[in-house]
Length: 208
Image (cartoon, rainbow, N blue to C red; front, side):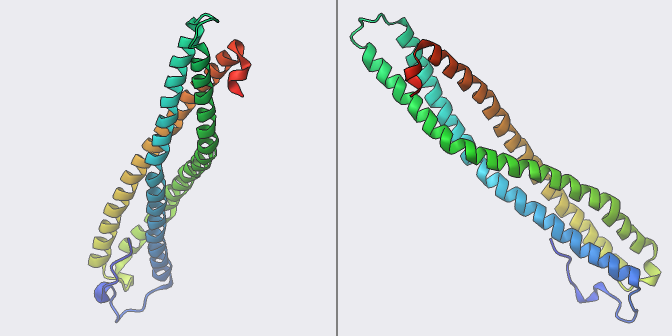
């Protein structure tokens, strides 16, 4: 996502005015910022499937536990397999807690990264729209005073906008995917809290 660096990008017979040098530094910076955005998005998207898979695994244990609990509630105290079902449910609850103890801290960390990225991305968008792109227009409108070749600069800028479009597309996928993970876990967390309350009302020892 760097500028093309071609030797004929500049007219060496002209001395670059101070405003052009400053703007081209900004032009290099916008490439660096877009590259940083892409790296953050790639890191975030790489982790999403693993987190989603682990949430689905806990949801599976939760479904089994609900089934065992419904079965247990219908059993009379003298049922010979009641102790077996009770033990199976207690084991499932322990497994759920073990999984959540590992998953929740990781999810909290990644949610923090996700929220920080949203804020960071908005700041970069603001900087590009309010500071960077208006400066590039200044070079174009004052091209006769500049050493940069306008044909190559315009092509390079067009290439950058295309690359930035790809970054924002990837960003949109990341925001959708991680947002869905956060929403899914929020719904699941409400269900598990209600379930644990039901277990405590039935027999608090199931939770320990």
